[in-house]
Length: 316
Image 1: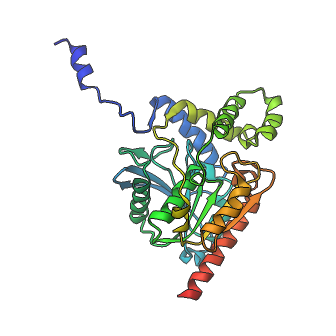
Image 2: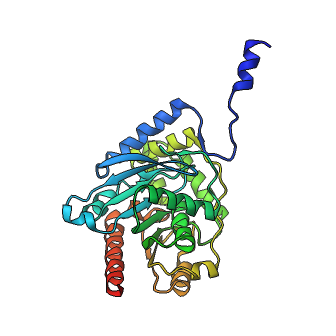
Image 3: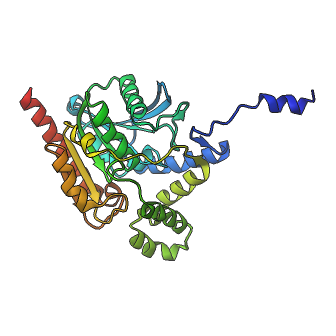
């Protein structure tokens, strides 16, 4: 058999159900763009990999500066689809000033985690998160998720709530079926990142898309789209009965001009279905309230977590 034929037989099969990088070169360019965003947030105390049944999960640990705050219930951050934990750069300084913070790169998205098994199904996604948190030794947490990460944290509250002190969902998936208008917005925003610099502020305002006016965000988005291929379907929304089963303190924050959810509908629906849930709409933003208005969102998240801790301690 010719040598090139033997080499072709030995080439590993590319799984089409696992997220992957297109090439090492594009992966490294994406990591450079990630590092530029990380540098804009709080400095990580450490980063490490933990193993789960679904692959290796990269974790970043932040603060707090005050040693007395180390004993407080930590915050765990779960990013949105197509990104990594670098997206939390506007939030890590304020959150980690008050509490320990852990940011996880979700396997199956561009980041430094490595996916080996599919985990988009609800039970598998919940199992992945439980295994990662077990590996970190975290038995009580405040869980925060954005967009697809919002679906992950709502799903966790539904299926495996045991270690959750609270859940905060930022303009999340999991409440409504992902509609065409959201995908149109995603593609329009991507194309707008290549627009001339003079046009970007107007496009950013029109599209409610801060990536267009923050150079580091723009480069990060472009690098991720070029470098990585996501291999999972959009998550199905939880039913009224599934949402109604949640008993974890729950906080929903939506952008007024969100295209992923209908904010006014969810403002009424979620508190009606989840006992004691809070829900609010942030003006002058779309899908990224924690990026557009970090000071407001950070302060409100921390207040909610403080209230959840107080309620838990009073009930103990």
